[in-house]
Image (tube, rainbow, N blue to C red; front, side, top):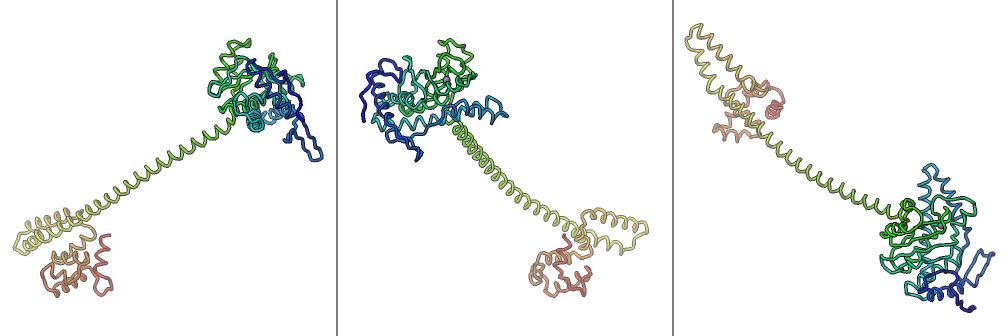
Length: 415
Ligand SMILES: [Zn+2]
């Protein structure tokens, strides 16, 4: 059933230019809400076939705030209020967007102003508030969007007034969220609303400014210069931001990812440095080993030289007819030579000292793992000579009649 069209716009107050469009919207919305279908047996309420739910206004405003204040009293009034504020704003903003979308398709409108027009009328019919849009408004589909409007009978401010309590902050946060959600959907630009004056805190009206999130603060500052309330008051106005929590969480997540990348980069660098250090360490060990081997060889050569070039002459000298005094000097000489050599004499060398130079040569080659046949070739002697030298070496090292491998023994002396 279609009822006759209104000729007067009475659910919303708008600048004259917008009146025809809003009147059209008013007729559409009035029609839409004229057929109510209550079905308590099923627990269902429908307008024009669309299901709705009724919520007691005070439960979503004054009493919700009171409950949150009580729940978060340990965190202070400011935080409790911010939590309630963000929660209600986000919910209402989402509902506003969804309702708007649904109406656009039902009304078959595409122009932003036509889309906007159903919002305030819908607001009036669903009991949130009536709307008065001021002539200074500039509803355009870009960042310059500016809407200044009042909600003369906001359900939220009413809940406070009915309880006889005065708020110290603007309370109409769902109104702010819903209207900005509807307009955001209408104009396709992000929009937020701040309530700059509120009847619940004793102001003359509930007044809102809606703008792009990056412009809202500037618009509030401009407005405060013209308003009767001191500017100090406006500095304290919270600028709601749709799903601020989500944005903060995303920022934290981004920071975490960035940190993880940084840590990975540092770890890679450290691993690289570590690898280079290990390589340098290996090179150093090789050099040290070579130095040790050279030092050992030098010591051996030094001792062999003493054996070959000095000791035989001293022994020959002893056999000659020398005086008692000369004998004392000779003993002294032998003792001093031994003293000079002693710091260099390791376990190995001291054992070698008992060997003849030829035996030392053979022992060194045995220790290095050269077989008898090869030793004979190297030293240019017969295999029998080598066998004989080996026998003498074993005797001098007291290995005779013992089942000890000569090479293993010589190697063990170096340890
Ligand atoms: Zn208010």
